[in-house]
Image 1 (cartoon, rainbow, N blue to C red):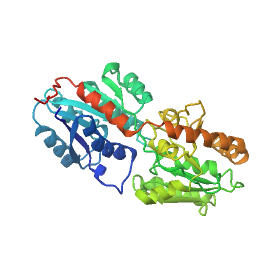
Image 2 (spheres, rainbow, N blue to C red):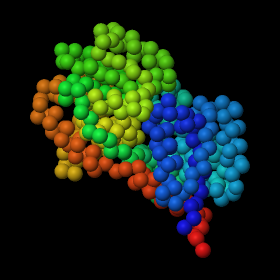
Image 3 (spheres, rainbow, N blue to C red):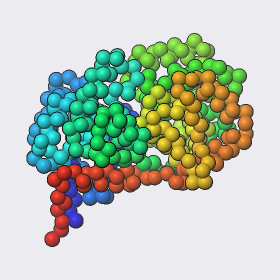
Image 4 (cartoon, helix red, strand yellow):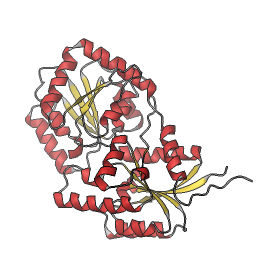
Length: 366
């Protein structure tokens, strides 16, 4: 069977490996893996301050869509699509559109209420108009269906995959903490610092790996918070790392920590588990799905209530003070590692959605 073609419209940042994010990594990987399931991908990278683009970015997105022939299958990253219904909705009359939602726009932490409400309404208009919506966890599917009033049969899940990596040897098995997340209000590094400030009697160090340019004011405030607690020599804001540098950082980690306010899935969690590293994270959104369970029922991570640095600190004390807890978590993380789904499963799920878009008629070899 000849490959069908899908045009994938993505933020321009997807092409920059020096600006890693879960959404960008997901988009890049799907481009690589969809051909194995019958879909040739034509990429369209559109620069702009999405989801609130300037006029030039809006014109470029409109041009990209306008030049596609009628009946074309189009996969749109929700960061690009969901803030501009005036561009997307009219195209539903002639293009076969699916929107991939990495994070509901109104769930971004730190937005002014009126901006969050406006983005939320715009997203609702887009998602109600397109024939297919793809989310990255079962939790996100439920949230989109209930929050935007979508028909459940139009919202599908394609959870991120994971590449199994060598087991992380760690440092001393307990004291090296690692947080992999862009340094933004939504990722909650300030809550992590507040928790760590209450356990300075323990012999930990913490490296925060992630972009520092998303919210400079937040980063500056975080640096002041770290300094005010006297933690400059124990908490490192390392900036983004990729490739071998990131692999080497993972290899030193004993425990992955994440204090997010909102996550649709949590790819950094499965990246940790793919190396057998246990996880301590907030119980929000799709993070429980990412942590999951080992095949024998063991739990490879600890989930704490959001908005509660004291609970995070208490679990850190348990991690340091209870060798049996560490052994159980590490054993479960290694068992979960072996059971993680790969990216082929993600691509297969997406291919199935694309294949059911209204008007799809696969070409068959003679």
